[in-house]
Length: 175
Length: 103
Image 1 (spheres, one colour):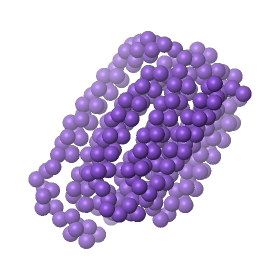
Image 2 (cartoon, rainbow over the protein chains, first blue to last red; image 1 turned 135 degrees about the vertical axis):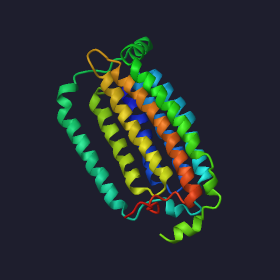
Image 3 (cartoon, rainbow over the protein chains, first blue to last red; image 1 turned 30 degrees about the horizontal axis):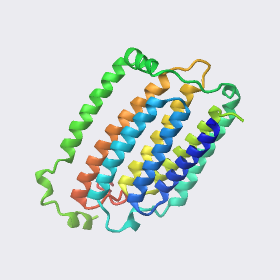
C-alpha cells in the first residue's frame, strides 16, 4: 500500500516539477508548482508526518503560491519567450544531471546500512514536546525571523518617492 | 518489495536536480524563486525520511523541516518584494538584464 502510494505521489511530484522548469507559460508554472508541492505533502503522509503534510498544504498551497501568483500578475512580462530558457540551457541540464548522478550514486552506495529499517511514526505530542523543549530557542528565533521578514517586505515593497521619475527605458538603454 | 529509505533519497535527489536546472536555466526571477522552492522541498523530503526510517523514530528531522518551511515563507515574501521593486524601477524581471554591479 505504501509502495503504491509512494510511486503515484512521486510520479506526480516529479512530472509537475518537470513542468515547472520547462513550461513556457509562467502562470502554468506556478500551477505546476502547486501540484508538485501537494505531491510532497502526500509523501509526508506516506512517511507518517501528518502534521507536516497539513503545514505544507497550508503554507505552500495556501500562502506561497498565492503570493507568487500575485507577483506574476504584477510583473507580467509581455513576451513569454524572454522568460523561458537561457540559451545555454544544455549546460544547466548537464550540471543538474551530474548532480543527480552524484547524489543517487552516493545514496545507493550507502544503502546497505539503512535498508533494513522500516518507517515508523510518532504522535503529534512528541513533535510538540520536541519543538517546545529541545528546540524552544530556535523556535523563538524563527518568530523573530518572520517578524523581520514581514517588516522588511513592507519597507522594500512600499512605493518610494524615487520611483516615479525613474526612467525605465533610459536606464535599460545605457546598458 | 518494501518501501526503503533509498526510494525517498532517489526521489529527493531528482527533485533537487530539477530545481537546480530551473535556477540555472530560467531567466525570469520569479521562475528562479519557484525552482528554489522545489530544492527546499527536496531537502524537506530527505529530512522527514531520515527522521522516519530509524529503529526508534526521532522528532529532530520533522522539527528542522518545520524551520525550513518557516524560513522559506520569509524568503519568498522578501524576494518577491525585491522583485516587485526591481520591476517598478527597471521594467523587467529578466535576471540576465540585471547587471548593474557588472564591473
